[in-house]
Length: 147
Image (cartoon, rainbow, N blue to C red):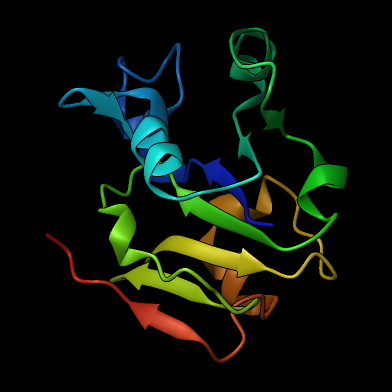
């Protein structure tokens, strides 16, 4: 069972005013958004997002199937967190990710797989220094090429 959650890091706010009313992963890039590309290219059983509080209520109404800012859901089992700013091809993500796997482009966290045993709060994922200091990454760090 693969579960995916999208998150916005602090740099996402620099996309304003485009991101004032929607998360960065809902911006169109070509014909699809990052969320649509990811969910169509990577099979998953459930998905969610770590959103800014001011967007959560409206986003929940538009996407009732999504788990939004839900700490219990995020810590209920293995979870792959994907940075909403990361434009990637779904084939770049391995079919099986070991909990503790982290993907980086420079100092930007683009992917993190959690085991569900060490919960992470949606606010913590926005700060790479917090992620590194809490050892969610383990020893499995991958560097992705910036394109």
